Picture (tube, rainbow, N blue to C red):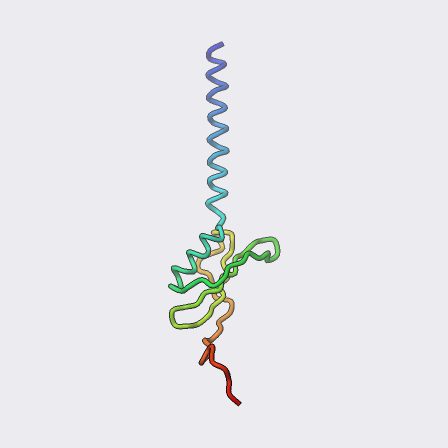
Length: 106
């Protein structure tokens, strides 16, 4: 009887460790919005202006608008799938506005 209990116990431990490793692997394969924002901040050394999650087909991506140190606004797209992010490519580059905040005189 004790061998049967030991077998059941070992089986349960084996199953639980398999489930735990599967959950860990799944979470390691996805990128959170916070991780995407941090990645873009580190790559551009800029200030994040906004971040939003969007559905692109069957997958999700984060669009992060950042003000670069040289004054450009860039929108970076980062996939929520870690394997799809060798380096986020800029999707839009907006040049800085000259005399921003000043009113035009006619």
